[in-house]
Length: 529
Image: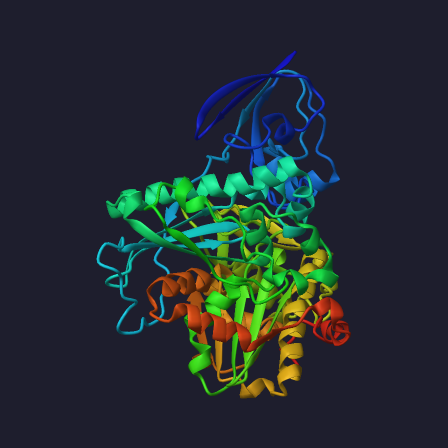
């Protein structure tokens, strides 16, 4: 049997193994595993490891691995764990390993709270817990319901990502009863861990929490509650399934040790795959008080769009979110340590860049790609169809802090398709409402991607409408903000019910115009009505 001698930030490990599997397969999933975001295609480069010594000649890098690493990194001994198949005794440096569930503090945007706040009974616990069940991230907020103060907020990874980065993969697995139980329990236990850290930071105890409000997309809510996924796997039944969460057993507050009788307020999904996370964002944006048109765009793994015309609204969900999180793009990673989120060339051959610290730049996240593709268009190195200038020979290369990166036409094409889906969704809602694009007076950007997005870059590429900058409001995690508001607003139940009743959801699978609008928005140029 052969042997791996592994070292990294988490320490050293010796592993006996039988040759054949890739290094990533040998290390498995969970703590100590090698992270990746491209399903082992060799695209993202997130799983880079360095060979320090090998007793035998190792198999050369395959085409995908060599393309991403480049000659310089290969000469330095770098390999991709998702493609590299070790042989013999090998000493390896693993700069990145999964560390288990890590919760990070955050300071989310919050709306203006009404006065007075919701009254509490004399013996009612004063704390409330707000939860946003995101496909990629879980977010928690602890609120003093008597004062309206957000005491602490945390976010962490959704452990379900090991079952698939997209919702359909998880729903397909949930058809198996054992997998369904795991998908439910993994999130419930992760939230319990996050709640423990949240209470520790706030110097509070679980029995002091007397109310929980929870939001999420329709699929995440179903998985959290352990419901069978059949209706969500059939697009023709999406609208019918919107009410199926009502009456489901909501026993998690008791499992978390909260105050006896603590209820879980499950904010209702708008319908189909348009979840309660968007409803919460609309609630936080207070669009119902606006007598003029407004848009809310929540950029997540799924992108949800809502249009308000001053009296009623329309909402839909479009695919494309993974591309904005870097998935499927060369050197694409999430907004984690090492992710480049800002790029500019002014002037000079190499860019000025900002990346998430600590550590060196390791890849690009969504906003960084938007800046990169904007530069390619503005400099004439790519045309509106996404074709690269001949002198690039199919590759645009650049260096940040000594690290080499490159993208090709396929990356630009994937981005163009994702941004075309967003543009088509916006235009379809405007058509339904009979509203012109310039009539939109407010555009609320929700989600981490929207928070870090350069408006100039996004508008030039057609990802966002060409509206004056003062009409944009960045809300960050609007879903969590809405869940917090639901805990303290004296009429949150009535307000949310009324808001939902005034919105119509559009299932794009049943909208023939969507395909026409989608193809019209594939060009990398400003959004054209």
